[in-house]
Length: 124
Image (cartoon, rainbow, N blue to C red):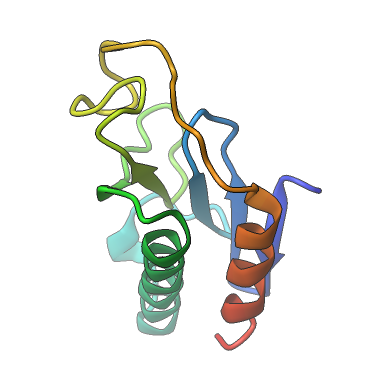
């Protein structure tokens, strides 16, 4: 499967390779800050985030969802949405933090999740 699971004229959703389920939402245009997005684009980003979060909770039965946006290295509006589990490598630390344990997660196949997210995002 491609790294991009959904895109339209305003946003794209990419897979972040990781030991946990992790997607990123990017604006199609290189916009530096969220406050610089117009109202319609902001709404689309939040609706996409909501769809992804709900799919992650339902499909993976994760313990927590993490949503992050930094952009220090890549000054382009994007959001990271991550399924977190109490037994993932880094929990309770952020995925950029210090590893807490070896990976012992057993996850369901990712492909059905990606397909469900893409299908739901088409409603945007």
